[in-house]
Length: 151
Length: 151
DNA sequence: GAAAAAATTGAGCCTATGCTATAATTCTAT
DNA sequence: ATAGAATTATAGCATAGGCTCAATTTTTTC
Image (cartoon, rainbow over all chains, first blue to last red; front, side, top):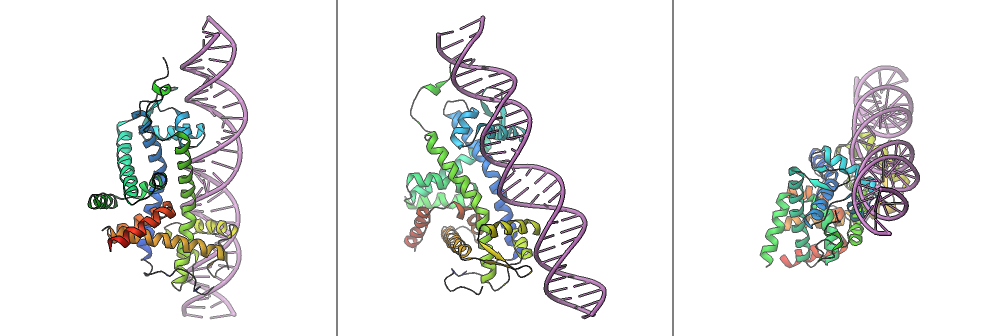
């Protein structure tokens, strides 16, 4: 198929293959870490809200089945991010708390930034959930500055 | 021991569980679609750049092994997004071209927007790669407007 | 036109993330 | 104190997306 006239043209040449593949590798890595961050962040939210972080609650909020949560918690425990007292709730370790805090800080900045651009509350919440895991320190700082300037 | 404050319906810093789980469901859906978009977008880039989109090229640029690409292309063909002429490269179907165009349009806006905030070229490229798949139409429009205003 | 190089295909394996169904355990209420 | 409800644990299955290794096919080169 020849170049279609209807297609959106690229405005820059393709990046060097080595550079591009490194970028994709980083993106895939971020995607793998995203779910872990979702769990840890949610557990922190539940605990800080004064509740136990039970498997059923986590499952209900993530929209997955409880055995799925059980399996992931086992992995998070192996990774040293949570500790579990059987039939009690889940708790964050020091490392887990650190991950949660960082993740939450990023999340808050991203969501606030979207809101500051006029994005509706509901959409900002959903988009921020996906975006936060792909925002580097540099971009996060740019978001912060943009909000300050806009004030 | 009674169930902690779970039964006490105080103010809710946490979103409603049903609302939150729906958000997570959407986010997971976006994550699943992200890889497909990466492939289709890259294939469009290669073709429009005047090259063949061969498995080896795609593999080199995505940073994965060639059989991994072969498997994914088989899936994309089943999904009706690409057609393959063995040893001749991969081509986009009408549907594939549509997905590629939309994906590229989003990608370009996101990357340009990050650049407009002062994010470095390299970081903007990597972050945009991850972010683009989680940007709704509403947020995309907000990005566009913000760039216009800033000009 | 045959040998070498390159590309594709296929088999088989692994891990991650989801599911259902069922068993075991703990909690709650009578 | 115990039956029933709630919660967690366990087993088994499925799909997606990675990998390596080896076989096949096409292209290139001499």
